[in-house]
Image (tube, rainbow, N blue to C red):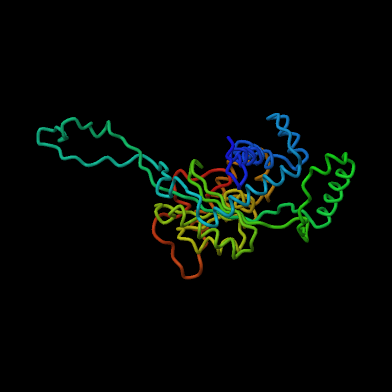
Length: 335
């Protein structure tokens, strides 16, 4: 389609739309790039995996731009509270045992008084459920791109361009201004996670800011899932003091050690604290010793009242202790 006006020239509006569509990367391809970017450890390997999996040839620089732009878009949407969550803490139901049957009146004749069509109490055994949510956070070390590595990559790119034919090199867009790299090879970032007992609902947050940024992240995500709506709210920690302080600000009922870190140190105390002989940490690491470690952990929890961490003089908000929660999490979760 072509439009022409006397004195103004002609225009083909569809050509501009077609060029715009051809210049963009589709949503499906962007998703594949992000998945390969998470799985791989280098852009060269990611590009090779993308070509092998989807038969799509893409340059390393374009692949990097796509992955970085998608990550920045998600972080910006999360910071602007534009990411919608289709679940809340009140929906995280966990079965804790059979419900107590209702007391029915018995007539003098010995028959149970029940409404028409209502099942008998012995046939109406229901399961008692509570809404339970776990909150946790941790700091991890991630690799970064140093300034030296950036200069090395730019030199490699310039060398490849000089080896191209003049016609192909002239068609390439000029390289963008190189950004300054990191001053260290590895840096620490903070992760936060809120999830239910079955891990069917999970909200993970990440920030590269300091511990103050972690506190803001925890408060924002706790408000996003309506943490106060859960009947049981438990915080899991690995023992770091700065992480514990941030969790204590949230409306949690208990903040306890996770099973993994507690089991590593359960034998470090006195023999009477573990309810048996003191065999050192090797007693837990041997094959088949997990059940014994769990029994010793429960003995320590019983003697110490649950190892709940709270600021001095502060009482837990209502509800049961984390050590008393039936059907509690397993593995690296609460004991």
